Image 1 (cartoon, rainbow, N blue to C red):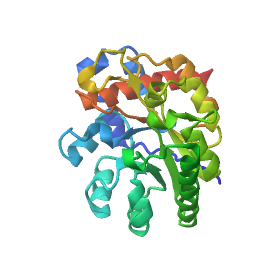
Image 2: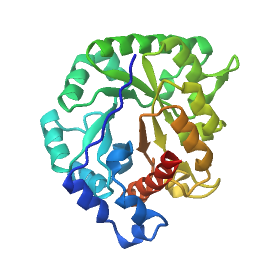
Image 3: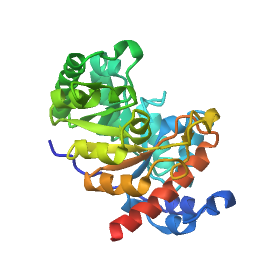
Image 4: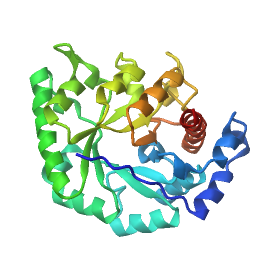
Length: 295
């Protein structure tokens, strides 16, 4: 199935917001240069889970705009109606490029889920997480889940939507020389897309730069996320601001680019300062990706 790129919109509001960063953020190397670059040229978004504790939804979306980013991945409906979300998206010059939708909603509330996402202009639904009691325990179980997701992807395709799957570390468990995630994708077929969380891949014992190559042609997005040095940043779940952790981005980013990724989605699971995390993360990606694409 074709996976068309989503062109990003950048309004005058977003351009103004991109320059309105705090002095502390501007002190980060490369920030000023990166903020001058139009984010319309680079497919960078924010996973709204990062901002869940940052005030109300309007305040969260305003922070995304101030960070110079014009695309978001929602957490379900964000607990608002499609009409309310559309009004806020317009106010803050944002678009929805994906939504994290629980597997139970895909199984039991597919029509309502499709209707909401079509109403807000989103065409990609992503399975975000499996509760522990829902995780298969062998290769056959992961293959069966993959077949089910392939069937759901086919249903969504008929409605003009796509289905993706987001990993954590438990999908890095190996059965018969393949990770659980690979068993799932092998069984699902080409309609299922991958949203690879780079920090969780590393926590699962794999090199993200190598692992992303296994999904060439199906790589919808990566969750651009960093791990802090072992034993540090415990108050932030061991995660770090993008580019300030231990992941080797000079190896990872070229591999992602070669795999024809559609979106880089900034995420941090437990940020102390969510706005700084997304602003600095955007600046880091702007600088690195601009340099890569000019080579």
